[in-house]
Amino acid sequence: MSVAFDSNVNLTVQVAFDNNPFDESLSYTDISTYVRQFSTKRGRANELGQFVGGTASLLLSNADNRFNPNNSSSPYFDSANSISKIQPLKPVKISATYDGTAYPIFFGFLDVIPVSFPALGADSVVEFNCVDAFKIFNQQNISSAGWRLGRGGFSEIGISAVLGYEDAQELSSARVSRLLDVIQFPSTQRTLDTGTLQVQSQTGTTDILSAIRECEISENAQFFIGKDGKAVFRNRNYRLSNTKAVNVQATFSNDG
Image 1 (cartoon, rainbow, N blue to C red):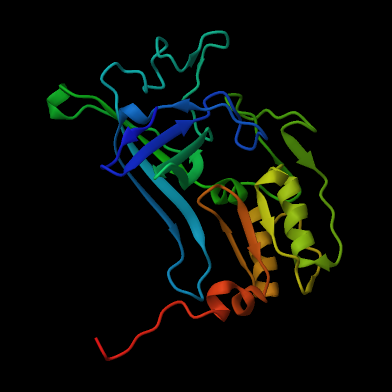
Image 2 (image 1 turned 180 degrees about the vertical axis):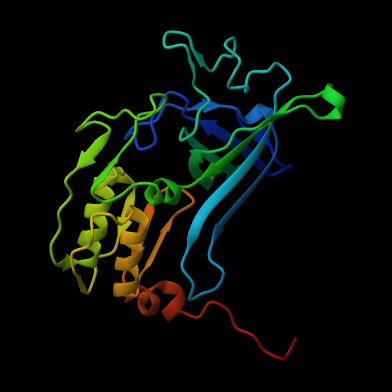
């Protein structure tokens, strides 16, 4: 259930404890009632800069020790496989509801999960530090990418790994789409403008994020992860054709 952020806004925080990072369909667990505070950061330093990876931090009440990854009695513990469901890369979604409409605030993945005991041990809190998909892109090479949560060093070909990537000269947007396919990023989570320029083949030792950055620079485009978790690629014409560029957004005068 959501919790009141103020008199007009309700906050909802959900974690897909039973899913892998890029599953097409996610089953969420609502942890809103345990949230004490949160913060998010995403965007870029200036209008001409590149977008950086988004982050979020959630401070959760852990009075019953439910968010401790080492607690085998936690409701988020997978007894069948003897492993906690509270692990890195689990999808996290933060949204706010105002006047009956839900607005996305952040979508990303669990990263670091420290447990602490403030008030001289009289209290217990857990911090869910989250990152967006940029971190996963940065950790995977073009030539081989994959993971399987909870089983270090193991991946299944065709299921959690893609090997032997090859490319050729093509539109920048086609290359970005191909690179997202390598990492198995869901097609439903992409908003890609059609590119205007061709890009050349890239080395297989390049990580996914750097490879997409090269396409972004060649196209003079914009690439970022939206607050809803979608990968967004805007071609070079976007800067001159989007609504904010061609329509007056505000009028200023000296008449008071």
